[in-house]
Length: 317
Ligand code: SF4
Ligand code: SF4
Ligand code: FES
Image (cartoon, rainbow, N blue to C red; front, side, top):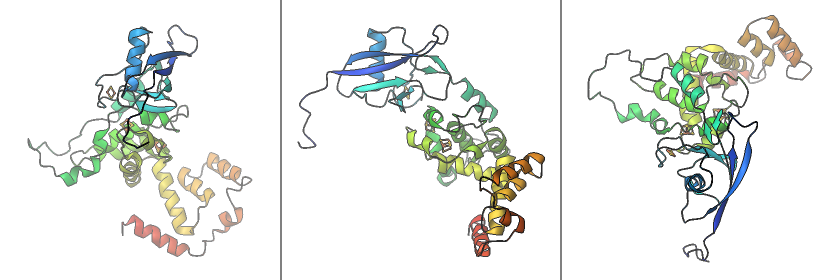
């Protein structure tokens, strides 16, 4: 069949399994299956609307703009976050609320934790230099580093897949908040303490650079390269928090020895405390520390070359 020829038959229906849960009355979540008549170019949102209008009037879901602008309609479809107003309906779908978030009812999740932490990151320009009046002179080059970050619609799809946020009480802000913070941190008009906020409040060094957030971002923001890495650099330069100490110690150890000595790294990061010594001793039987190397402190052959490579990359040469 030519790629341009029309399909001879349109599918009749979409079979959708919907997550249903009202924490106020239900003991546990359940799934309900509905069959919805298929229409050409049907979006996921059309399926949800049909179920709500014709089959389950009490079914809870959320949307506002209907055109990929507000970010409120993101849901999990067959295990992956999608904007319901924008993505085409599949013929078989299981639709669930975004992960890593508290469910209010059915597909509606709470944004309270996100908004509360956003408030702690001082989410507005902090002007150290007086506003010069309109129009404020700004060049495209000055705004280029934040061009993609300004596309964020705060749909929280990225937060829902972040493996660090799946850990209870991780303390990590998550990718969507880091995008918001990085946009301000890289704005030439801003004079806020972004390095301190990124290190101590957002705990940016907890990001493990797995790129899951980028994979699902509906507006294709290079979250790791353009939001998270610049923030890590800022924290590192400001020396803010344990993450920055760890990164500095990591570089110092490799630069001096040509290899990573985990015992020295732990001591340099945490200082010489009882806990740090215990941690170092626990690493010996697991083979993470070679006592000979740790105690004799012999640099690896070629360590000088490695040290020079680090120095030139730090200088940006
Ligand atoms: S970075 Fe992308 S996935 Fe994350 S909130 Fe913004 S638009 Fe959504
Ligand atoms: S790259 Fe970092 S922020 Fe993004 S999902 Fe992985 S750990 Fe989370
Ligand atoms: S309803 Fe606004 S992005 Fe989908």
